[in-house]
Image 1 (cartoon, one colour):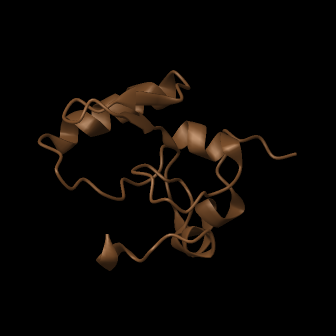
Image 2: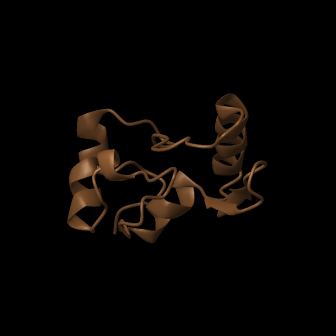
Length: 96
């Protein structure tokens, strides 16, 4: 079984980093702060962090990758490539 902390072959092909891309920052007052919170949570291997603007729990790319599949709901830090997200039912970015 593949180590969930390691990027998948698909992620290595598209050159995504270990923490994953940020897909949507709509409504975020300080994107740099979100990036710092996310990176720190991934280093600690936390499931998520609390969004300072909404107070909601945001799942980390580390946790999402450790589950082993994309759920298709458009998670902010989804670590899966666009084709896997689409196959899981995620709507195209233009309709978010």
